[in-house]
Amino acid sequence: MIDYSIQNKKAWEFDAYEFWIKQAGTPQERAKMDREDPIGMLRRYAEYFDAYENIKVANICGSCGKKAIPLAILGAEVTVFDISQDNKRYAMEVAAAADVKIGFEVCDVLEIDMNRYEGYFDVVFMEGGILHYFHNIDDFMNIMYSLLRPGGKMICSDFHPFQKIADILNLEQPVIDSYFSTDVFEGEMAHARFYEEEIRKQIPKCSYRKYTVSEIINAVINCGMSLKRFDEHPAWTNDKLPGEFTLIGVRE
Image (tube, rainbow, N blue to C red; front, side, top):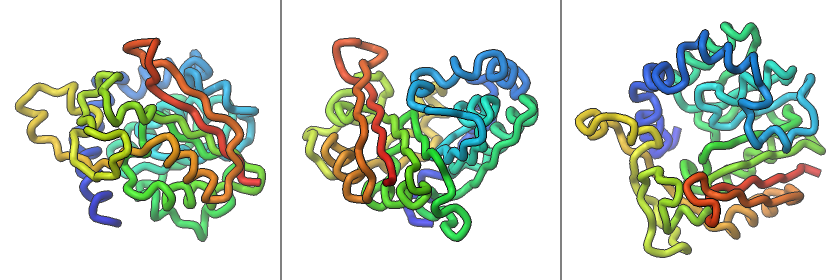
């Protein structure tokens, strides 16, 4: 595992299981919500799936299974790839309570076992802001391409690159002087702002590299995918400014 992944793993395993209990509910409570309205739990991402039944989905940096489990309830075969063992613990307990099965590989996404998973998935899906955890977006997109079967689709939803220069989503993460900066920098992990100050100071930092729109789009093209769609979504704090995007790529 590369050094910055080790650093990020420490951050994402800090109090993670207890955090999800407080924020998302007990596994039984979360499972009940997922079963009652799996489409609703997928939020806007539901519109990007052509089907659910019997499709193989790789949920990249799928965290505590908040999207993987609704997908499994809808009939998909889902494998989560995430760096946190505590995230796996919570996700597997929710899946059991929801009476569905998911796969969960605790690993660095850049080190996924391609002997097992190359060309395996119909859909590669990611959301919630993950690209900035990888220092080389071309390497990342090459992995996504390799996971897909021919004709498979990548659904990549992430924070809008406008986040590089303005904290429009109020995530309390560092902003950069130049939109075109290629600097790697340290910042708090996404959940740090929910903790009291004394505990917050103890949480390990993450290592980030934020990208421009063109860097993201060109990485998709360069890995061999066809870019089919690029949607921009308003920020939840201000609907006049971009907050997130969703990109659709297809391995032809």
